[in-house]
Image (cartoon, rainbow, N blue to C red; front, top):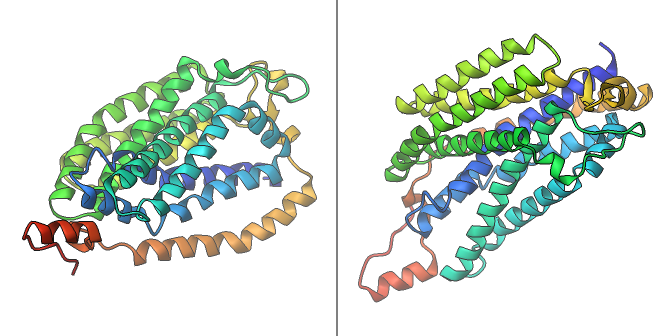
Length: 350
């Protein structure tokens, strides 16, 4: 295997890590308000991802950086051609990150409500648009002889791409609900379990329809049928596990489904990195890659740094693996004051 092909596979691994890990972050953000009865429930949801959400986004930074260094032509065509959706994703991620840090700065309902809505928006937008972008990879885009995208903005949002956005949206919603069921206890967990069971079936149906459409109409490699079969099995596993209230199996099955969808995307376009509607103008591993020397240096850096990142992230998940409950959320000053005025005993954290 040459280094360019190796880096194509490594970039696929990076996107897999990002979408699997950030997927439940997005799901929690989208479900934070609908699943909550009060501010304590919202804080409980945020605390489940508080120690890890920013670390999960490192996978995105690494994936984009690796694309820039290993396949500069791919990077240039992607960021210029998909400028609007990528800009919307960037703004949404910034808004979401700021909201996590700012919602507790002022202890008033109106302040928290505003930032909570920003967390929702910052989760819904990228959850949908990442699916749109990857669906365009599978379908193929209009590229001219100078490796420039010439399809226009509306071409990005055709029915196949919109259904791809619905796939990531539904899978991330299910991923978030199952993660909340894994990370919480008590009555809140029961609500999360019930919601995960309701979301699993439509998520499986939407994903199944898109996968078959992609495979029948756009796949360039027959071996990806094996991936389709395993994706189908994983989706069935999610439905069965959520109904049986086996959150661990449900989370694992949904993570496998998301990861295999990335395999399906990259497997369907191989050996291209961005297929063109005209095969003659496609960006391929051969014509879009950096020099062999650059790839060699990157390989040595990755050999030493990637294991460190994996060990650190694994340690983080282990340290923060404990379930949370409403009793673990300390009351805010306004809640203490309201309880005192009403003659009630304020909730206390253990």
